[in-house]
Length: 376
Image (cartoon, rainbow, N blue to C red):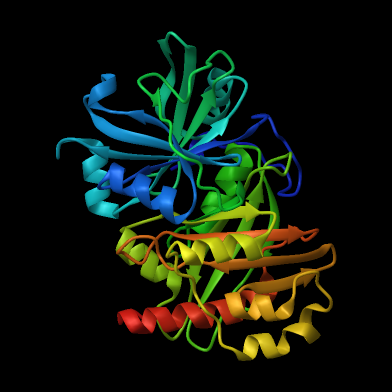
């Protein structure tokens, strides 16, 4: 959501104005139906280690919450204790989904002041929580759908995550997932440019790439996408909208079942995708599979790569090359009952792209899944 009357800057879309000075994606906060089960899924399925808990035993009377980590990735899963909670309402409407994308900044007051002055709608004003570990400062603004950006300053906080959270000692269960590469949003038809402009004018991001329906389409459906990144290039947010097609696109299916705009998928970076995907498959994580003809054409399309092609084919991994190098990627099936949120695993060898050469094969695989669900 953005107050267009307050947006007055008109810098070129490629010009940087990184006034937020974002240090990192601090965490992603999922609101779910059962936090304990969600924690177990991310732990045993994806290899995240549970590191903190907040709930009745820690003085939190509103919700149960677990913090999980893998490399530099921090996920939080929270579920309500009562149906009157806003967490319960959000989960009833959207299913399990990302409520908050938290960004670490040096000054949450400055981040809130500057973004709201440029048109952002405040979710909460700068505030601080305190316990024996110090001061934990946050502020928040509203973005697409019911999603929030939370600004976090933990420079004076030494605790495991935030006040009311206590450490957990669980065995590490690593699969090689190291960092968040990008976070993708789905928005309704006609809203992509609104949110591109929001990230540019309100948050100082610039447009990195643009894909239209000629790039991302099949015989039946299409989408359009623009990739926004902050000035340092550390934070990337592709924004998708559906395009006109003969049948329902994956974006429309998401919007129908999520009941609005939201985070479609999270791309997690690994340094060894072959090892990571083997581990995840053994743990029961299911991935989309493209047609076998894709692998017959792969050597001629991408040239020489370090990874053995027979292993790439066996695991169902996709490969794409651009002027700067190549990347490998694979996409999970939806991680809940609704066909909404999923996970991408990605490894980069120089390429800063998003797998443009894989779009058609991936779309066809997704359409097969949609057809099985009766949603194409």
